[in-house]
Image 1: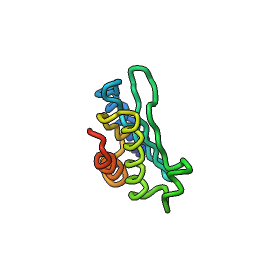
Image 2 (image 1 turned 90 degrees about the horizontal axis):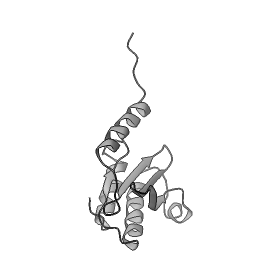
Image 3 (image 1 turned 180 degrees about the horizontal axis):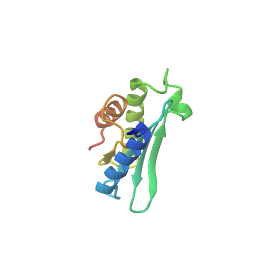
Image 4 (image 1 turned 45 degrees about the vertical axis):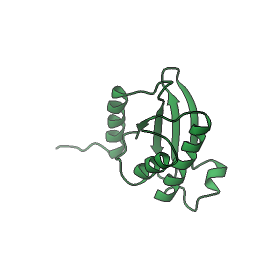
Length: 122
């Protein structure tokens, strides 16, 4: 009998394959996105040193206060603008987008589009 892999295992495999293809540098860091059932997290990472330069999530009080729900498309779009504003304050304009093995659709797409509109290039 053929058994199916779980969706989370498939996502982790996709993410590992993607991470083999690209990594963030000091010139062009990586915008990594993680989505759980209740929250979204975004980080801008310099992989050469292993530092997180900027981070934002729907768990943070100032972000959570602006949102009605922390797990919908509107929350993802707001998080995209927050991470882009923080990045621009640090002088980061160009990033590599790491969708974390998630399908580029819905919340992930909303976050990416909002970050682009707020001034990040990728």
